[in-house]
Length: 63
Image (tube, rainbow, N blue to C red; front, side, top):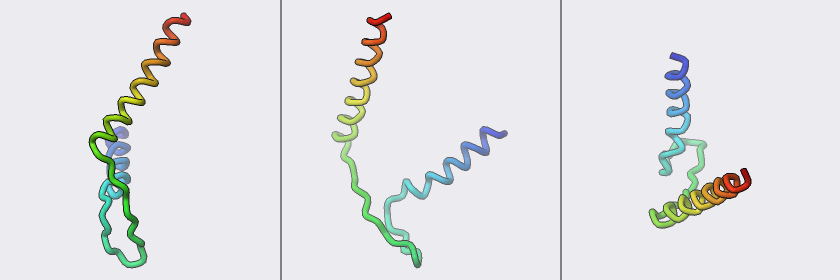
């Protein structure tokens, strides 16, 4: 039950950040959010994976 409450609260807390549009609420300024293309996202994930694999390989060879 505790995990369900934590997961639900995390979902609710992050839900507003996932909607990048302006909601026109009084007193809350609208911010433009830069978008990322699928190509840029894939390149970023590939770079992270390369660093992780390089670190894993160096640790494996050192042992």
